[in-house]
Length: 458
Image (cartoon, rainbow, N blue to C red; front, side):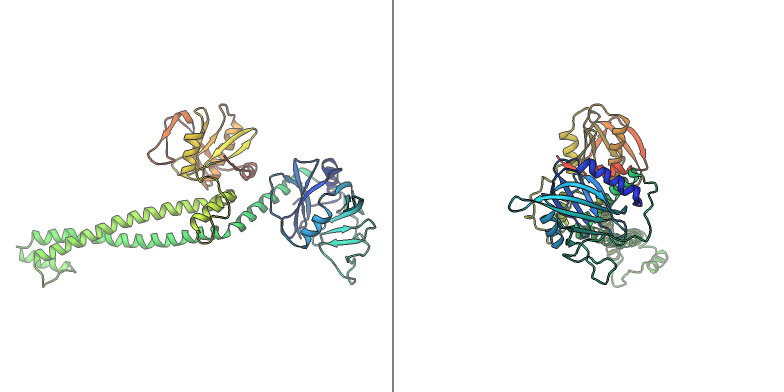
């Protein structure tokens, strides 16, 4: 995070004045133990994120689609009681420090206007949120300190500004970099929240991959052993060939460890042929089981690689599929599982599927013949469709990046075609391209990663 100095705090104040001064606070959400999200009446382009993160507290505007359920508790109750519905009258910087004071008006139950103050102390290691009454006495604080502290924070005590060992330097401050840091914080927060919520599924997929890899290791060892036993057919044929040649037969019998002297030559040959058939069936079964296991591993690994970009609906769908005993199907009414996703980029929809049914729905039912189709070459990953007759390089690049992200690969060869130049394959979601262009991609912009987090379902 860009270090917050005096120049930075005044730039933040200027941005706050421009966007939310003379607005009502319409909603308050406690995201976690140190992040708070505010929504406003007259500024509906962004939300304000207050982060009292221990090492790097900050204020920053975040996209309107950054949502979260509020964490219940005393902090949530107090903030909703005093902040929600209040009107922002003034914002000031206190004591030339990283401290912002909001003057708020709010009507009480008798419709009388009362004045409150919200103080945000954005100082690393000692950040705090303090709410004051009209006389600037402390109503509540996120962090309290007793009388032994250098600056006590106690309910009903008069608020006293933090003392400074030295004046805060104004210095230089890049507000654009600061906002980029805020965006990265939000992206990381969304990813962490998504992973925490889906941790049982995430751990299940990792466990399944380990289990399947152990299974394929055992099957491959069994397969190699079975291949060696196919020689039994040759032994059986040799016994029948040399049954009348005593010298050759004796030499052959010594090399056949399973030869039974109590049986005739024909019976031993028949036994060897049966063993051959048994191991041949083993090879066929093992190859089939290994192929199934490898396909499952590939699918689970792809899901783990794109885990940050799975929607809540998809997390629930996958949890219901793989963890049916842990997830009730009555929890939430889900869209049809074959319903694909889309994002909007500069007014154009870019659709994508995340399984073969969604791919089939997107490409062969929703797309028009002049729309652009993208997918990773020779790999069973997402179909991507740009819903536009005309696309430029910028739009195409975003589509390519989305296809690469959803493949879970670090780099790949991608094929681009018009919908009119592809046709259905034999299996669901399979495509055959009559005409296409090839692109190689090795990296994805952060902006596309953020765009993918705004996904919606058709």
